Image 1 (cartoon, rainbow, N blue to C red):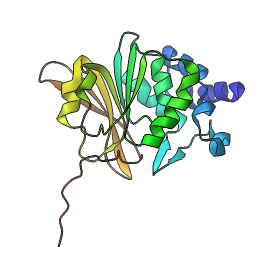
Image 2 (spheres, rainbow, N blue to C red; image 1 turned 90 degrees about the horizontal axis):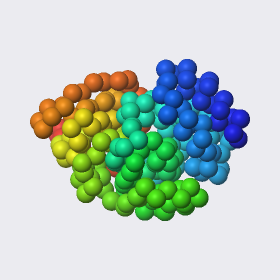
Image 3 (cartoon, rainbow, N blue to C red; image 1 turned 120 degrees about the vertical axis):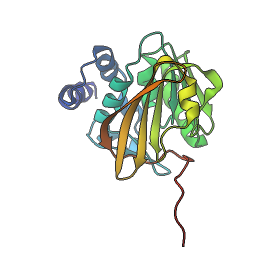
Length: 216
């Protein structure tokens, strides 16, 4: 498994222009296979999303790496993750940041993530059950926010308000099959810089605000 993990980093992630050495070290170290559902473990290092149930997925390794490189987490950062899933990205973030608050809306996912993370003994990671689709200001300000599901209307204003000045947020914006990954940086009290990084396709964040639809 370790050899396969190292090959994944060398052949999939480095070739996708991911060169952050702190991040690469975490991707080599965190046992991705441990967070994959047992029935899917043979796909742990494949360049594919892995079903978790309830319409949710564990992202492909290359997407994970590109998201985290864009987020540029620093050792002193306080991080908010919306959508814990299996806990894999939570574990990688734990190796990059000072504090990680991860919010999961599905109770069984939170329990599974707690079980997956327990062997690592992280004292600076807190898993919380709740609906974070419109923000999670409870522990704000955050230096980095990762929203692990698509938001058709983009992140609510509460997310931006929860960012510290200089803080970064990575969000999926739009609807399948064309979803933008956007990096939003808070420059000042009411000033933000937003850039579109690339397009992909991921499941919608549960309870995300929806656009109004015309009805006959």
